[in-house]
Image (cartoon, rainbow, N blue to C red; front, side, top):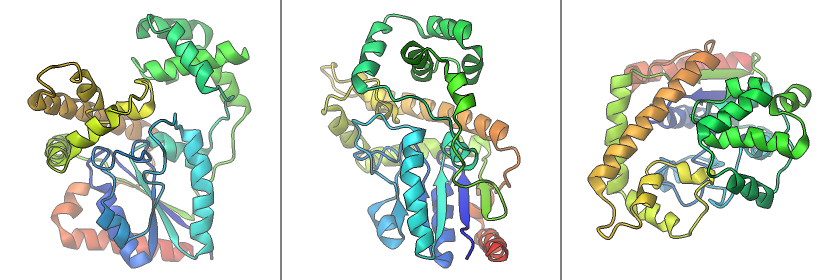
Length: 320
């Protein structure tokens, strides 16, 4: 049998996880995480990971398998997902990869450049040495020495800008040079065996869902989850510390009144909407050829959802 796979991408709160589960049930699929925040242990609620009931109902892989202290990356995810895919295929099952991290899908289907390993101690020292430098000045430095990488990195992305500067400092070679010379083979090249689904969303509809979902998160224990993680005293520069609401809860730790729920809700919803907007821009630019599926239609219409599921199942059968 051909090693088939389904890739489902979409912005946060677009309903892609529910669609993946609906597709997995009749096809005997295994749902594989392709979201950079849902990999972390300790943040099930605030990263909207599948519930324990969902994970018991259907097999899920690569959810919550990374310790929050880990500086996880797309390269780490690729190394982790390769044996997972092999295991799923060896059992005659269908992997359904679902998530909102466009870079994961790009690396999966197009490959990724290997970059040199930099130890935690070296990383921490470099970050500390540049802590007083404004992100705009860092980006100006990078533009002078590696304009290609500078153009690829989003404005105000301090973490990726520092990473590019760090690689040049430690190796004498620019990040763009490493990317040109050391591409890995793609794990899932986009051929007839891969079925893709992109779930863009109407902005007003998505923004309303984002606010409703965050309030539900808090009702289900999101605040306690955030405070529990913060009590571990993790380094503020770790990727996990950028998870929804964590920066705002961290800022409230020194307040004698404790967290201001109304303010945290406002700021977290604002941040999530901005993140969703960046995701949709990325998908529009990087996944222009992916088939679209409107989540508004199938969420409101069971017949439309069933038709979409049957169409995907038929397409997969043709590729067997």
